[in-house]
Image (tube, rainbow, N blue to C red; front, side):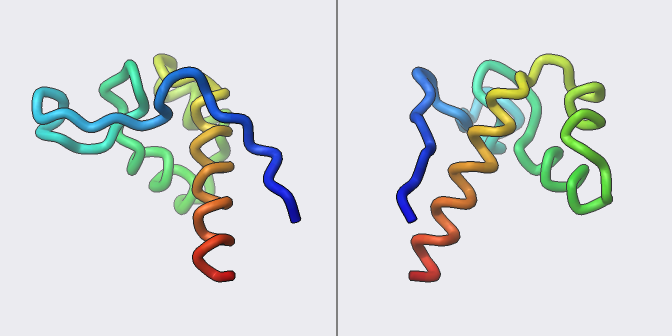
Length: 77
């Protein structure tokens, strides 16, 4: 199965000691990636997450989830 993920022009996730003490965040925001994971684990939707964190773009969430999927599948192979 060939990946259809297209790389974003910018990084999806960044980490800097100056932003939340180096916690991985969606690029260009102060929103931790863990917040998305917590929302999804709690049964919330991507739309719920985006409503709660309007600085994150849908494209960032989709790209993050696609990248996570590709990495998990490649590790399992």
